[in-house]
Amino acid sequence: MSGEKIIFTNSRDNIKNILQVKRSISTKVMPNNNPNNDGRNGKKYRMLMNRILLFNLFFLLSCSEKSNSKMEKETTLIRDTIESKINTQPDLSVNSLKLLDESSVRNITSKKLLARDFIRAHPAVVFLSNDNTQYLIASQYEGDIANYFSLFEVGYLRDQPGLDSVGVRIQYNDFISDSGLKLGMELNQLIELKGKRYKEYSEHGIKVLSYTIVNRDSPLIGESGLPLYFMSVSLKNNKVFKIIFGFEYP
Image 1 (cartoon, rainbow, N blue to C red):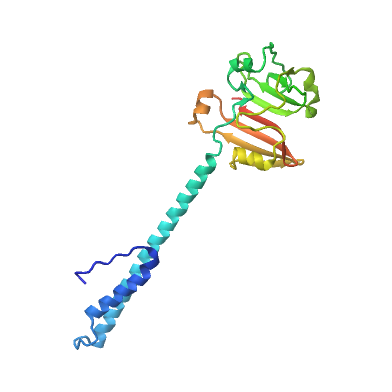
Image 2 (image 1 turned 180 degrees about the vertical axis):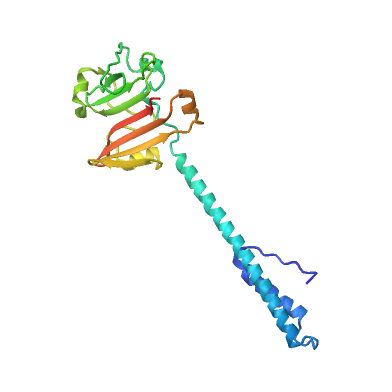
């Protein structure tokens, strides 16, 4: 026994290897033709060997369980990392109009804009698509400079008919976010585009998917100075009909 090396390569062969080791030890330590081994000593020896075998089985099974648990945790971590990286960059613009960038308004219009009260909770500028079917409401919070928008809302003008009298018409027929999100998308297209890490609720036949970034260590949140970023997408019959995204008012 002293000159042998015993190596257990993997958990699949552990039990077989232990039994082989036991038989090897039994043959070397207690040969059948040894007259000095009486029945009592043989019984003690068998008890000792059984204890050794049970201890080794327990030890190896414990190691196997820990290894499996570690693999499951690593698999979960990898899966969550993959899911969290599905378009982790939040939407920050519609067409060429950007959140928190007052100079970007020149990308879509040269007209003088007027932020109006009572359209939404905060002063807002309304843009209309060229074909007069969609609207974009760009809200700015109190104290912000002109054209510095913190929240966008995109929807169908038929659902908000009063906006056509206060809106500024621009050259685009569709309002599209920087990730490609737009009205009329199917639910599966939305999830493929924005990922599965959302919260969902339904009300009066309308399904709402919500994505949120609240991590204060996020550069996006830190640089904005605002509490959180969110996106809320409303669907009817599994088709997107309203999109709201931006930063929450502090």
